[in-house]
Structures are given as C-alpha cells and as structure tokens.
Length: 62
View 1: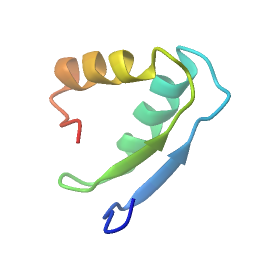
View 2: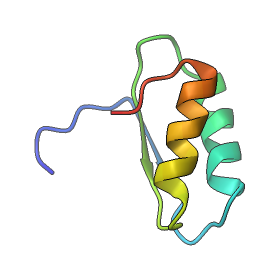
View 3: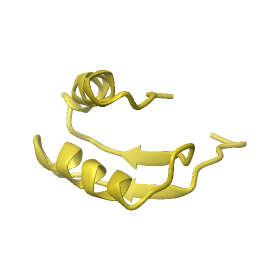
C-alpha cells in the first residue's frame, strides 16, 4: 500500500494470540500520543483482537 505513514512498524507474523497484542502494548508504551504503530500480523484473530484492544485502551484502529 503506497502512501502509508507510520512511526513504528511491528512485525508479529507467525505469532499467535496473545503475543501480537502484548508486543503492540509494549511498543505503544514507548511511543508518544499521536504517533502511528503499524502492525503486520498473520494470526486469523488479530483484526478482532486489535479492534477490542483499541476499544478498551482508547487507541484508534486505522
């Protein structure tokens, strides 16, 4: 996808739940408000898991 703008990229391919969420949480802890974290995941439940995570933490899923 061209034109992507992000500050940090997190590759969690081949990791199963809950590891993608835990790694994202750790990455976000080191980021400032307004920064964008790009997550690359292959776990089938990742879209739902990240939607739930963002809903509970106040982050925005793009």
